[in-house]
Length: 108
Image 1 (tube, rainbow, N blue to C red):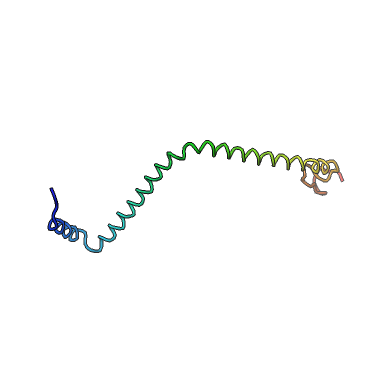
Image 2: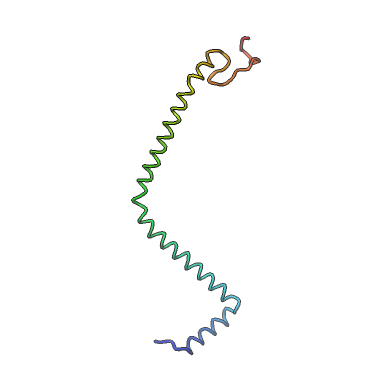
């Protein structure tokens, strides 16, 4: 069943009468946006299949970075520890926090 030029023209006139000339450009824009979204989502689904083998490697790399950061923080804490111990021995600080002279219960 082929549609000839007259049938297509009649269908176009019926659509124009039903929806009006103001609604047709909006409908075409909406259809275009929907098609772009559908196309990008389809590409996303296809690329998701490719990304799955990479995820464990990314997780391992992130875990290695976190271990490096933890080691760096431990080194910094170890470097600070002698200073904290020296301050606690002179009685002016405890764990690096200065004690005030007016603190209740403290002997001057």
